[in-house]
Each structure stands twice: as C-alpha cells, then as structure tokens.
Image (cartoon, rainbow, N blue to C red):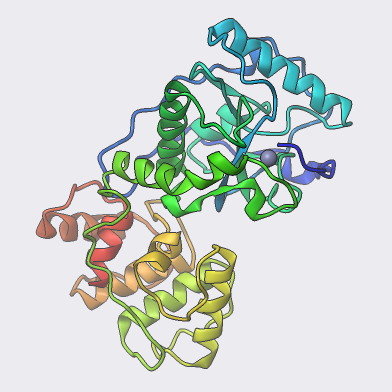
Length: 354
Ligand SMILES: [Zn+2]
C-alpha cells in the first residue's frame, strides 16, 4: 500500500446491501475458475471494524499492492494470520475503520479476507464489495489486493504468485472484469507500490489470469464487431445502449455519430483504455458488454433484446429480462453451440453482435 489514503467516510444509506442469496455466477463463456480458499476475518482473528462498512459496486478495477513489509521466510499459515492482524493494526493507527484492502496474499500463498464484508460481497452474487481504503483515487471503484512483501527489486515467491493469479481470475469471473482491469497501485496514485520489479510483471499477471479464464494468453477468439464513427445498424444501437448503461450520454438511433464517439471515448478513458473512439474487442470486454441475466433491467437488457430481435427472435425491447428474453437467449445459445444457460456473458454477447 503505502500511500496517503484518505479515510473513507461511510454513507449509511448505502450500507444495507441488498443481498438476494443468488449463487455466484460464472464468467461469461469461460470454463469456470474454481473459487480459491479465502481465510475469513473471523478465522484469522480480526478485530471488529470500528465503523459500519458500506457496500458499493460493481468494481471496475483490481488494484495490486505490496505491503512494503519484510520479505519474511516464514511462509506458514500462522505467519499469514500475523500479517493480516498487523495490517489491521497499522490501518487502525491511520484512523481507518478497518483493514484498507479487500484481500491479502501472504508470502506462503495464503489468501485472506482483508476488510470485513469482502467475502459477503464476493459470494453474494450482486457484484458488490466493501468501500475500501487502499487507493486514494480508486476506493469506490476498485478491489484492492495487498501482497505481503517488498517487491522493488525481487518478485513474489511462486506460491504467492500462483495464489494471486487464481484470486485475480476468480475476481474477474465473479465481477465480470477483463484481465486488463488488473492494475498496479502506482498507475493511480503517487506511490512506488507495488514496487518496480512487481509492477514490471503485471503484463504477465494479466496473461496468466487470462489463461485461467480460458482467454488463451490474453487474446480471445470471440468474434467481436469493430464499430467506428459513421457505422450504422443494430450493433451500433446495442453499443449505444451499453454506453448508456455505463452512465454515458449516447443517442440510441443506431448511427455512430459525434455524441456516440464522445461517449465511447469517455467510457474508454474510464476503463484505462486508449480513448480512440473505436469499439473493438478491448472496449467490448472492458466490459462494455456486461453480463445480463434474468431479473436484470435497463439499457443493457434493451441492448440484449435489440440484438435478439435483429437475430429474428420475437422479444419486446422493454428493458426487462424475464422468461421470454431468457428463452430467446437459450434458443440463440443452442443454435450457436454455446453453453445454454440463458445468461448473456461475453461469449453470447460477441455472437449476438457478430
Ligand atoms: Zn499500494
């Protein structure tokens, strides 16, 4: 971590996370990444948080840190518990409500819950996470992972690296993030974290995560369309609806005009992508094409329904993902040889738009 991080003030109105108990879902299209074993706060002996912990989400980014503590040779589970407790005390001493980051990966490869309620968010099926205190600029939008050690000139041990890869892959799957969402702390804040040596290896981390997710080393075979200014048609309408879903102003007329280009660039900037105004694979998977499933509502669902209609399905473009839309998605998946689950993840999105 170390960077001056502003104490997060908690808005109580957001605190009552609406958890439905829905099962954790799998990532779009990829073979499911198994949930890694994560040691909860109660198990490692955390003190209670000193203020209520607010849930936010979904995250856009995973921020990788190092603890800048000693590169200890004790790689036991006990040592993992010890560093987790130490970090909580360091963060209390800064006046924070609780451990700042969401996860801690020990030098021995143990993965621990950091901030309270992180596992609740991870397993709750709503893509929520506790508002953290690990990055001055990204707390509201980023999951934070502290890696025990100092990696300015050496790299994390193999066990730690492998645990980090598995954790990141599972987070990408659960929160519908692309491996490109994995970033080093220094990208956002004035800090050396996570150290020069570790930071230089982040491309490999993304590649390893992509491989676990079934992305084949960071590239995928998904047949995304490439949309440029001037393009017209239902694919543009879908992109426009997805931009609106992401909070950007865009028309929905199916014409890739100047306001649409501006919205694309704003979306790309918000995802740390090159703001070139062209919607290609990286932008679709940033993800502009968020997973949509039964029960969802809004512009993203309208985009699904627009694409289904263009594919000949008989659905109403009403922004409500109900049984009729789900059945149409399942028929489309079946016809395309995709996994038939009625959920529109990246694989189904890319085929709908291809
Ligand atoms: Zn950091």
